[in-house]
Image (cartoon, one colour):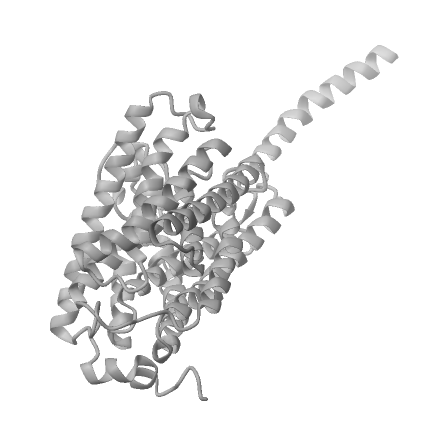
Length: 444
């Protein structure tokens, strides 16, 4: 009797178990509340970097007659890019239709329109490395990166570009430059620079080199501000700039640690190396300025903070603490000399050092990622041949510099021919707050 019972149980299990296995295979991925909570938090932190962080950081550095114009540009870009991201930006950056690893085709450079207007996205849509948090959160997280990148360019042409021209330029630039570069680097197998093996954890190439080069081209095409460099153009409120830099520092943990797209050990290490590199860069810039000019400045240490944040961005997921220390110190010193000595010698008017900090810091960080991601130097990447990886990083940097530079130049020249880029000399003298927005930052 007992044997019959076991025989019957065995038959039942042999019938039920395959069905259970099939049901388990077909079951939808289970959302992880911890990863979801972290990604929600990281998304808020990255948005906080633009408004109010970057708005205050840039706003304090311009003259008082232009503070509202810079802040207005940051807010308007936030609105514009959010809408474009929903309509087609997310799709052309992350749609993987037609991509094939090792095959270079049209979709290696830009995604399709399968996700246009966020088609198919529902509360049940789940994404992530192990499909553990809502796709809606990933969309919003990546949207905040798309927002801050064009906003960074504002610092290069501050105090002289028409608001209408700025809006159109940012919309076109986002479409033709930001989204394709993001796709090539981050979309996965089949993306051009992804297949090359370019390491860019959180946006050294996609965000900072991209914005820095665009900023350099923009300031060259627009020309110098009236009176530059002989007329004093000192920052009008360094308190705002320091507060903005502090907000950027805090928000950057969402930028870098959030790029692990999970609440895991990679996110924890990204947070640690971000803090180390930023602190080292702040000190590096401060002491370089102290030795060179005799006194350390508040603007200098704030700029050093941002330089360190920029340089560690591509490396945050692969370098160790000592690599972060070297990257930070190098960024502080190199960006100090590029934003001061180099700019003065070459004579270009990069108003708020968008190229000197983001362009140079991004390039330096991208190259050094290839060095310090190696386990032999305390990194956590898979780099076994440092020379080969550095060459790959150079390729990624070079492609981005050339592509961004050429396309940005064409966009600006076309817009200049169609509608003009600069305000008039009279409007520039009055200030963009009154001339473009009929408001004043200070009614004293």
